[in-house]
Amino acid sequence: MVCLHSLRSLVPAAVRGLIRQNRIHVRNTSGMSAGYNQANVVILHKSLADDFEKFCQANGGPLPLLYRSDPGESKCPTLSSNSDIRTDCLLYRRYEHGVYTESLTSLESYSEQLKDMVTFYLGCSFSFESAVRKLGVPVRNVEQELNVSMYKTAVPCHQVGAFSCNLVVTMRPIPQGKLEAAVVATHPMKKYHGAPVHIGSPDFLGINDLQKTDYGDAVQLHPGDVPVFWACGVTGIEAVVSCKSPLAFTHSPGCMFITDVKNEDTSDPCIKEKPIVVQISSDPLHYSLVSQWTAEKIRSLEEIIGIDPGNRGIKNLLVKDELLKCCLSLSHAKSVLITTGFPTHYRHIPPEETDGPPGALAIAAMLQALGKKVAIVTDEHAVDMNRKIVEDAVEQGVLKTGVPLLSYKGDTPDCAVKFLCENGDPAIPRFDHLVAIERAGRASDGNYYNARKINIKHLVDPIDDLFVAAQNIPGISTTGVGDGGNELGTGKVKESVKKYIRNGDTIACDVAADFTVIAGVSNWGGYAISCALYLLNACEIHERYLRKAIGFTELLEHETWTSSLPTIEKEEKLLAILVNHGIRSGVTGNLAMEVDGLPFYNAHSDMIKQLLEVTVR
Image (cartoon, rainbow, N blue to C red; front, side, top):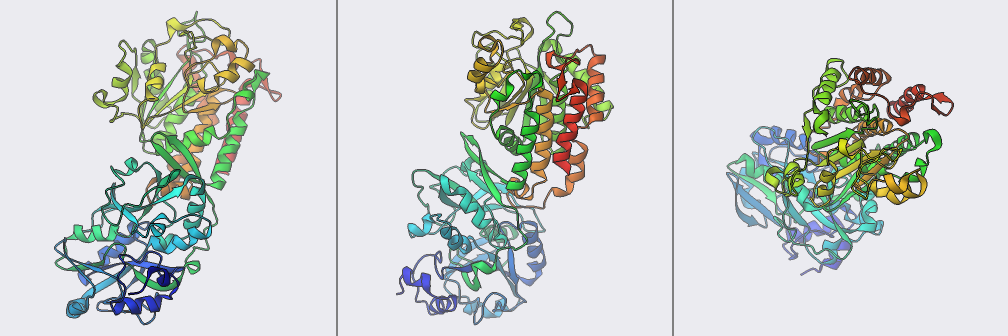
């Protein structure tokens, strides 16, 4: 018997020779021939070969195709010399009509049937283990001498013909401080699954218990480790099951075909963008990926909107990267609830101001373009007015489709959870993300105040309760956009509001959001969110992560997204619509104010120009 330690230093041809002679009795090939690539194997009847190749092309993350043999071909000259697929895998599986029937150490007894069968060699994550170790990332399955953990997910692959299955992933525990190193190491290795498809809680993938693997072993996490999931070639086995072929063979999960190709020969030289890892939720734990270039663009947007009209002290409220984090979270969301409405003009009917609705509709327009469900919740007295505003916005081309309008009164203690969740069940939230933009926020004394310290509670419904309830509902994130510290969600920076904002001790909102986007004018924050969402979904690294590296890229939807960006023309139309409904400009909308020497109205136009220059240039 050959020990595992010696197998790590042997060249692939030597290891294949030992496997062929049945002299290796370990359970998997992880760590063998360190520095060389390994491959998953699927062997199908030639009549299914074209469809399976298309299935691999449609799901390139889990099924990167390295080589397709001719019918009956037992060698793979581009991957190895002196190899024989009938004998050179540690263990095989046999399937009949989609049912696993037995494990085999050799396929030589099926040589006649193999004459009409095609072998597919697919990239394997064992191939990147040496690369991550070079950057100081521990490989826990190798440390624990276990097969890697593999799980079936609830994520469907793109179907082709008879091939229809869900994605299978591997999980590797990675120390939190090494997450970015692991991503950077694997990102260029697209032939071996590339960067992770999910980092954080397994719940997002439909995996209930990491101790219950579908294939492989349950690798143990160390304190401080984060579960990181890569697309897995065992997806090919699930595809074999789905097609119900009369006869098919695969490698046994973890028992790979070891190639003669070195790791350093497989990084894609065309990949120049560096990915970065950003945590967007702690409960449930969730990280996202974005290119460094895109992140810097979004940071530029955050800096642009952070100017301080009237020198009111809002620069002291800015929190770095809140725009990036909130937009990454929104990008992952499927259903978003937006609220706006600040009754600044408490003696006027309607009391709302023009700051807020344009930014809210700019966010809604981009979310719609990205295929997300969007709804708006507002004060009961303002529902009809906002419904007409939305209808006018659709008619004038500011929105492509209407947005449902809701109200919330919060008559009983459990109203908020019932409103946010199906049947009041926190396990089934209706929304993934709540966004408040220029929405009056509740102060510590339970009242609502405008900037002049006037109590406007009688004009505000308790929509804050939804944000408070969301703090205890896993899976719902929240964002507050404001320009003075008395807006819903800005409770995250309330101590700074009290210190630096006039009347801050009284007016500071006490309700915090997960993310607080501070802007010189709240509408600008809404425009920046729209632009940032555009940038994220045009980012190849982020877009691949969103779709879990399955199916085809959605970057072709670029033109639709571009047409949904905020523009000067759209803002002018919206302001005209608002004025037509009797809505006045707010305190910060005073036309007498100047921003960097420009009249305030011109400053709005200049702001949109600056945001678009960063976004689309």
